Length: 317
Image (cartoon, helix red, strand yellow):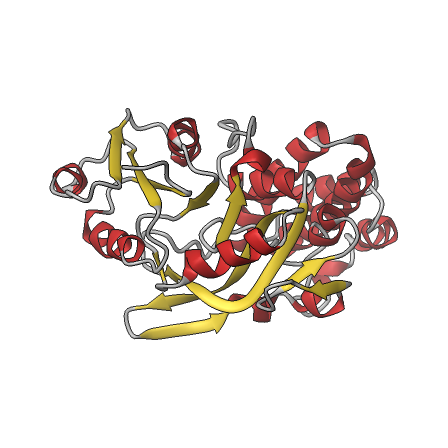
């Protein structure tokens, strides 16, 4: 096979029931010059036998001892030979022109190192709202039209703009990276979750960023990947933000600290309504260390003794 233009990295763990559909969506892309690297993270189901049955010359698979999605993606990165890198999870799928559409923008915009597009989640009986509907901040960004006319290029500092979003735009499945902008980066093994948040934000501080308001990816919702524990997700995000605070360039650290203030205050609020009053106080005290929510955290700390008497309500972060 000639040198691939795009390396597609797919970590897989016990998703034999979905991985054929995933791979079919990759092999049927309208841009064919790809290599497909599946990293089997020690699966115990029929994933290994399914991978052995794939004969497409663009396909390679590697089996490692079960050690988590971050290491599996890092192994994929170490084998990637393409000029561009894309990630897909083994239970998700791409629409046929996903890679071609994103690649067209990156080829038209040489200073842009990463582009993400809209996506939808789907269940057995239908689709959920588009992800961009959860990014109201997109409408207030300063942008220009991309040269190919398919999307927008963020003006200003994309790291500072994107880290302030209520929902972080860091999903890997709808994203395409230039290999040069991810070179030397790895997914941190220390993070239990939210490794995508850390990785994508580190990329956003290195390059210009574009986005395409077109649904090109379908992310599956099923019992094995749905977490209804929003509090736990908040804690995962906090871990990633603390790691970012340590690792980002000094001129981006203030933006991370402002987001940490919001996050600590949000966790304090959720801890309170779970009747974990000491944890609430702990996170409100943490919020006082950061800009962004100091007055809010101070007010809630002062009100902790009387808040149990008030009717329960939830407010957005």
